[in-house]
Structures are given as structure tokens and as C-alpha cells.
Length: 113
Length: 114
Image (cartoon, rainbow over all chains, first blue to last red; front, side, top):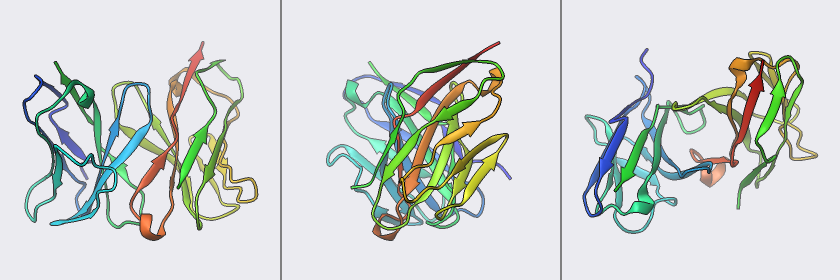
């Protein structure tokens, strides 16, 4: 059973461009979570999605950030008009239910020049 | 709100030394508690967990006991190895309306020397 997959592993964008981060959950997992890890800090919750629904987006910045988890395909975290402060590692996790252990992907390291 | 506080690092030990990384939490209700480990350049791996008071989670020689009276979940290992060098994160899932959301401590860097 493959683990949580994220791509790309590394992404470089210039200020003002768009960043699209993809996450494929483990087989059988319908709950997906996105976290952000800024340099020298712990992980901060961003958003929790279940197939086609956003359950909790209390950690998402109000502007430029959006997330989706369509019926088919991976979950996407989209950052529009990136700024240098968006440089961070973005981790996706999945679980079979919201009370189960979350399993993390390897992360996407975004660098904004 | 919910929060997790870990002892500040970095922690540097010699091989075979005893390890303790302190973790205390604040949460309403009865959270589940976790320790995750992150090796350089990788994602987080679940190390152990406990879902109710007095539960002891254990894995690979690491242990942690859920202490409701002191709101703590300290990580211990009797004899560390060089391969244990990593960043360790304590986390909680508060449940209730926060189901699904993990709250993490700031992480503790552990370096083990031969």
C-alpha cells in the first residue's frame, strides 16, 4: 500500500506566480489535511478536506490560498500571486476517518524568489 | 485554544544515553496525543500515540504515558542511537469540533553522537 504522495517535492516560483501543490492520499483514505512548516517552526494546520468538501479551513490565509479535493484525482493546494513569505514546506496528511491517525507525505518545499 | 509546549532544544546526547523530551498540552475535553519524528528532508512519521488517560504508547524503544493530572506526554528512551537523530514533534487531536486538526508543538531537535 503506497503511502501519501506529494508532488512536486521541490517547487521554485517567482513573486507573483501561482503555485499548485498536489497530494494523493493513501488508498482507502478519504480525509486529507494540509499543514505548513515555516523555517525553524513546527507544523501549522491549514485546511481539512473530505471528498468534494472543505470541512475546516480555519488555518488558511484569507487571501490567495485555496484548496480542493475533487471526487476524482488528487487534492490541490493552490497559492496565487506568491510572496517570499510563502516559502515553506507544505505537508499533506491523510486518514480513513477524522478520528484516526494521520499519515504524512514527504512534503513539497516551496521557494519563492 | 488548544496548544502544545515542548522543551526547547536542541538536545545533544552521546550514544546509549537516556532521553527525555518534555511535552505538556492545553486542550478542552479529552484529546488524543501523538509523537511524530521527522528525519532530515523527509515528512513526519508517527512514532507513538495514546488516546486516553494513563495509556502508554511505545514503539522502537520509545515510550510516552498520557498523564491527565499533569497534562503531559513526555517522550523517553532508555538508550539512544545515532540513528535516532531527528526532530521530534508532540501533537494533539482535541476532537469535538476540532476533529481532524492536529496541533503541534514547536519540535525538538535531537542529535546523538557516537
